[in-house]
Image (cartoon, rainbow, N blue to C red; front, side, top):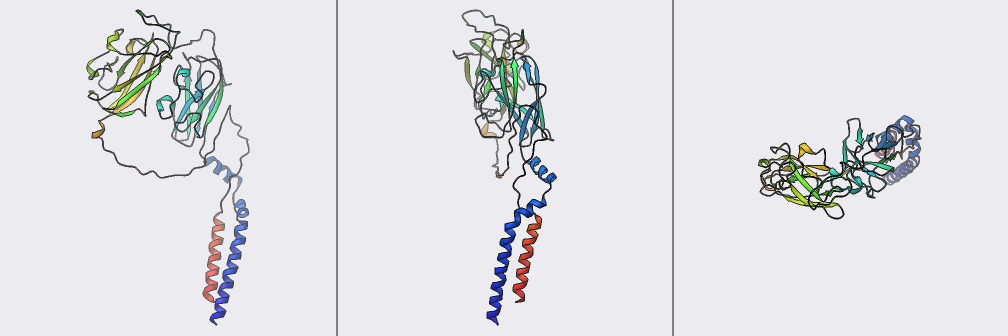
Length: 371
């Protein structure tokens, strides 16, 4: 009797195995029939993507304001940069009046135009091109969800626009500067400034500033922020709150020589500085002018956050939870075609398949128990 029961048990297991193999073979068909077109469209819509569009006919003059808008379901911030005639190949700073001399830095959020993404995953930004130094030609606007340049692998949305110089449009941020002494001048230009790192520092850190100056051969720095002078304080002073810059007085500014390639740089050691924790803005100006007298000078700014000294800060480690997402990259030149066909993604077995598998297991168990 035991031998018969053993044979019956083996026969039952074999039949269950055959049934499972058959079911697995037809699972794609079952899953296919369980999804409607609306469900497929919903799955596609839920996949992360980023896109950028622009209103109008994509043809603009220097000096116009151009509105960009789009969707971003990947992150809560959209980062914009530009490529085109005479600009760095890996991307230029669209938020700088002289993008040709303002390359991107992957780890520097200040070198991108940052646009917040709304709760409905939409974003928009208006680009005022007044006083921008741009050649006539076709430019590509890039929208990315992270701090990556053109050569990095990341979801990217792009839009093409044509920009041309209009009659009488500005070719720089200022009029030709007039200087005295032995200072040299070049054609009207622009001044840029960026800060190395992520713009978050502790008091005592050394902060490197650098940029370009195509207007003069001297760059003048001053600082504004918590408890500092409203027209600008002397950044080179250990107690800047007590020392205001004096308009047109070169000795009250931090002056930096501009190199032959129109670049400049300076490292600011903040040890022993009397500064409150908070956000500060550093001005780089082509002339020794304070904040109230910038109308006739080219200038750039960068904002940084300074916290308490590192030894007084307390930190706690965080645990990163790895996630896996499927990315859909959408690249647009004009308004995308809403009628484009949607390709259904590969589907996995549905709930009905799972129930069938459980049911077969139950049948096998009952059969074995009965014998």
